[in-house]
Length: 356
Image (cartoon, rainbow, N blue to C red; front, side, top):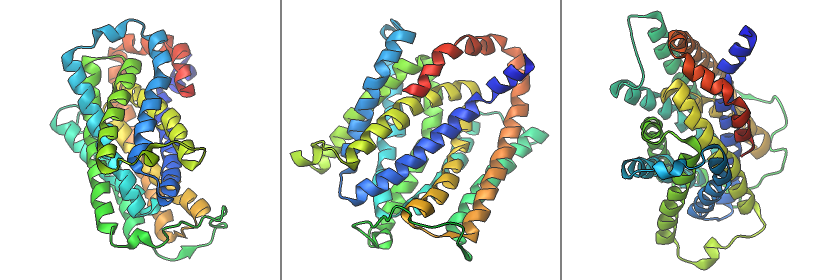
């Protein structure tokens, strides 16, 4: 019985690791597609719209009749969540096209710091610097961020651990990563990361007003598809830009809609209710780890001493933070057995989330 309980305590961590794997795949796919000349806002619009459609059956089955409880206040929070969590971060697609996956993914280090500070300021995250747990959480955060900075700023000797560029990738816009749009890409990546940091706090507040993860996913994805469509049409009104074809763009849309929109949003919605708004943000550093390796294997970028050192720092910092959160949550789990029972009784239903 105790072993089963321990496994269930790790579900939030398992969900977040899966999300980072999904995100890594999307980063690599998006870079390839954007380099081929596809409009980023077209991908985002179709991605969010398809994500909403895929989640509707789950919402109708598990939260039947709950959509009627949507109020004006809840809609405002949903609109805000879509704006800061989906639409504004969409500029990262352009930033990725202006730079490279290995460079762009390092801007995830902004998210843990910003999210942690915002959560503490708005009292969404407890922090007691006089306690061992509070100090461990802070140290873990700083080590994680330090690791991503090492990857960004320190290269060192190139390591030849495995064959690189095993798929023979040759971008059409080779050399553009450090061209005249590099500064623009950097600004857009920073803006996207800061917006995502705010989103975790907005997400926690939205779920208090409208506590239905499936219907909130449907509504947020649908609103985000409208927002991104407006931006996309304003930037490019050519019909050919919005036409779907059997190519990498369509694959990216389907992949991102299923794994990086519907499943990701539902998972994060649940994790935020279980662990707070800072918990998901800390896992963004794991994407740096995955992307650094796959970027080398698939797209041909070199793996250096700095990359390896930074990855180990990220994992060490993440472990420290998770250990601190685990210790911090022990009293709350005892005080709130109803929530634990609700999660256990809903396991069978929530298994379908992985299939979204």
